[in-house]
Image 1 (cartoon, rainbow, N blue to C red):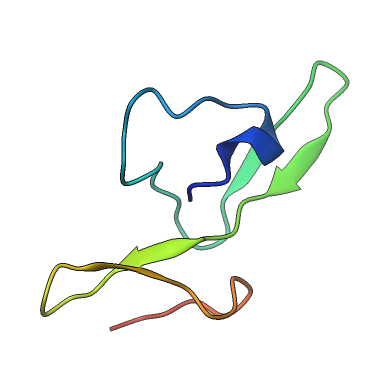
Image 2 (image 1 turned 135 degrees about the horizontal axis):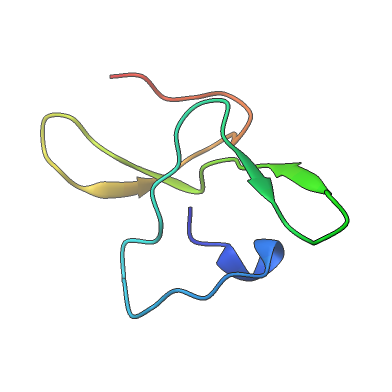
Length: 62
């Protein structure tokens, strides 16, 4: 996912974003608030190209 600021994270100079997995949650504060992580991009299995997802709530499985 590349929208790291939405979760209070920084990118750390990684142009591809951070990896997330299906069903991933992130603890975002000391009060115990948990947010679901949804993908913004995916890596195409045949070409290796990083492509934007059309719907972050539907996982691309190729």
